[in-house]
Length: 93
Image (cartoon, rainbow, N blue to C red; front, top):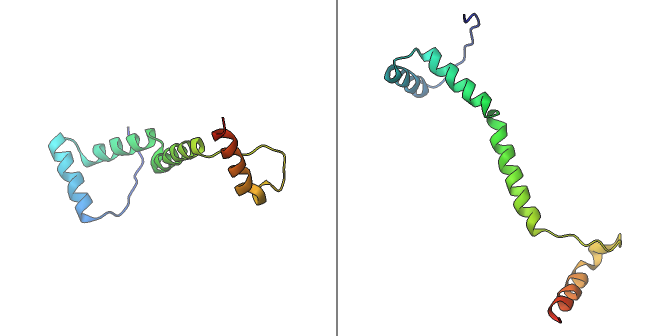
């Protein structure tokens, strides 16, 4: 048995869309709203999609980014020289 009430304002367009969907399904609007809310929560809410996209982008970028592990704490200052040297070594083979 449902005992809780939740109320919010929405656009007249969204309200009409919800009422139309409820009529088409032969269900009360409350049923449609509850199903939509449950589905949204099951998916992890709105933030989850953004976080998934960020993780995907991070993984794609990480595959393209390398790091020099030469122990030189001033490596960034010499990055161009180091890259040129490594490319020359790689292509000299």
